Structures are given as C-alpha cells and as structure tokens.
Length: 274
Ligand code: SF4
Image (cartoon, helix red, strand yellow):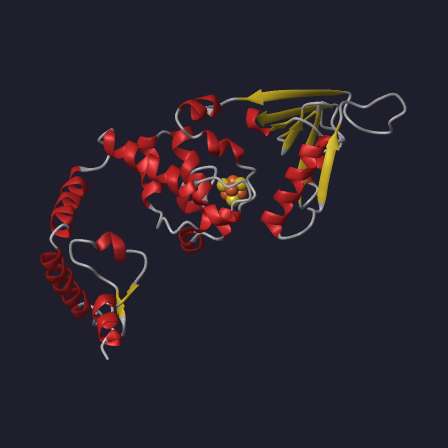
C-alpha cells in the first residue's frame, strides 16, 4: 500500500466552490488508500456535487445521523487538491472523474428525486423486507428500497423487475428518508412500467386478472378467501405451513405462520357487537 502509484476513491460530496472532495468512512480506509500513493483519482456521480462548504456540512450532518445515529462518522476528510510545497504527505496529482452512468436518463424518466439520495441506508434499516432477506438477495450493487429503485436503472427493468414487487408499500422508508425521496411512489412507477411493457409472465397477468374480477364482487371474494384460508389451515402443522401445493416457491426456503381461523373483519364485527 505504501509503495502504490495510484489510489482510487469515490466521494460522498464534491464541493463546487473550492473544488474539494469529501469522503466519509468508519474505518479510515479512504485515507489509507489515498494519502500514500503518488496519484489520487476520484470517481463520483454527477449528483454528488454541492454548491459550497456550508451545503456540504449540512449534508454531512444528515448523512451521519441517518446512517449511524451519531453526530459525525469516525473519519470525515476533505481533500482540497494535490500536495503543496511544504506538505509532508499527500498525492502529487489529483484527478476527478464525473460519472453519469444513467443519471441524466433518470431525470428524463421521472426518477429525478432519486438523485437526492445520499446513501445513508436509513430506508434499508427500517424496511420490513430488507430486515428479513438481507442485502445479497437484492442481486444489485445497492440493496433495500433505494436499491430497488436504482437497480432497474443500471441493470435494466427486465432483469430486476421483481425488486419493485418485493415491497409492501408500507411507506416507512419514505418516512425515515432524510431527503424525503418518495420511494413507494417510485417503486409503483416501476411496477406500472413493467406491466405496460409486458414484462410480467402470462401466469401472473392471468392470475391478477382473476383476482381483480373476484375482488370486484365482495360476496364472492369473502367466500373464496374463506375457503382458501380453510384449505391452507388444513396444511398447517404445529402452527406453521411448510408446503403449499401449486405455490411451492413460497415455502421452499421458509415457513409461514398458519392463518387465523377467522378473518380480521369477522373478528372486528364480533368485537363491535354489543
Ligand atoms: S433513499 Fe433516502 S433513506 Fe434511503 S439511502 Fe437514500 S437518502 Fe438514505
């Protein structure tokens, strides 16, 4: 590491009025990679540019608090350029590479709000799906709600359309996001696009068509769901369902609790009865 010629880093913020860059880490790995080499190359997305130092400080406070709950991260460093005369260390050259990689397209395709993301991870920590399945299951660079919005931009909707569907739309991610990105709305946008472009499999289109037809007939809906719950309950063992005929994918890797004997509405009506 000490004899390396080139060190490459990203940046949390690029500060326009001074040309400085800011990195935030908890381990000091950015500093170790960038100070000893002769040349420092920074690659960062175009949305990382902020106008001035006060703007950067404001963003830093939001980032640290939303990511770790602390006032500041362990290592917050501002690099203002290559080594000057009299400096004891630092790179002799520093280059900044601005990366677009689909970001301009995001603006044009109605995803401009996502460019506000500072990658704090608060949306992931509060997501009920992320907390159950973890990061690798998302299959892209970014997991959680923000990953579900970003991955279709980078990898294509066809490859990653499942991500938008793996969301309960409970809205918790939007509530905790420090820059107020409407993540559930953006995810619904991906669902609509996937539907419009015919990316959903025929079985799903057919199944949803039947469900929509039944759901518009409340009596039939209650009858059908009541029967389905009875059948599923018969498959339960010790309070859990570990196999579902015709829907084995749901139970291949995990069990689900046996549904209650009575629906919420039935119990609610009983409770309200004097
Ligand atoms: S979407 Fe919001 S909460 Fe999630 S990482 Fe980005 S800024 Fe943080």
